[in-house]
Image (cartoon, rainbow, N blue to C red):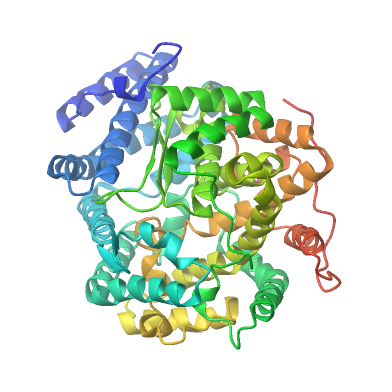
Length: 577
């Protein structure tokens, strides 16, 4: 690649089973000759090319789910993926069977061996048909949500396009936006229930084939969680119930009183600022331009990276019909430059999603020189620190995106939103643990599970006349539940760490930014809790970590914090690498 890569220049030929088999046979032959270093180099190049091709295929499908060719390419990739996994897992087993673990670790790094040991427990050729079917079902869910054509007022929008209406200052407009949104889900509830029922049973069956009692331990291994388990997550969720739920309840009650509402309804929760949620300074083009000024003010490393992203065309941020919802960052390991996907809708969410995905992208760019493909990305919860921390680190320069007059209001709104997200994220995770513990539950029983958990994590929720939500249907709008099971708690774990970066930045911004950039550069070279400690942060699983950031947030928001207790939130800083 040149010094100024362009997205349009990235291309990889379509692989096939025969070609992959031949490539892996050549790697095996190098191992037979005793040339382990050359074999590992060849394997790394092969994986980079395959992952680049797969990322391109899935990105193009997300950019237009109605494109028949893009859908066919995704179907082909989904069918080939289990075959590639079979070849990759066999090679990992062979490498791990070598008694010279020290020599292997010297070439790959010791953490790679832990990851491979986890990976080989998640695959067997017997589950290849189920893996392909899982991908097909998830793709159908994505297509279904992308197909929404919703009428509100005189406008026709997709689900992302409802954003401005859902936080409109007029309460009646907000209510109508939520009615329109959830009428779509109610109309498709039978298919949504069927898709999820098939996915749950399919995943449970794969787990049993692989020797697990149920899907939960398999899911943790698929997410490469090597240094914590479900019992740690249970304790963390309990911290959220203890420290965050009461604070969010107080914030929502204050909002109800400020507006003079008799009751705070579900459609009121998105309107955080009494004066109206501050949004971006302009349209897509204005926001993209203003972001350069923001990053210039924040840090030269971020500024130069963002300039490369813009000039190379590594962003697709406009909302349009047929485009998959949400936002994500993907990467092309052959090129070394990531790509940001989003759906701007003119609300503050554009800023949150943009800074979040830029955090992912910056991490992937900073870690591009890690020695192997396994280290280019950290595991999910660590990756979300990099994204969510940048949301907070953008605070001092956020006026470039929202206007200086609204900067303080935006920071307050974002902080309140970050706190309010934690109970919801914990509810999503608890729900999935309950679902996969009872794989034979009926759809109605799953909806009842959600209703029960909402009373624990979001006891303030009042759906009024939105019947689909009142019966427990809210979770069906969360793509992670369908496509990335057990991923969602990662956001809440990362939020605890990101808020620690925020606290650090309030004391010494330059030092916080340096620590953040150094964490990004480590990529996935260590497990989650080791990465957290290396950045001078406290593990979310440690007593006092969450309580400490909640206490700081309560103080900044002007609330009494005597009920929020905890220990100091920072571990000693290790020597910088």
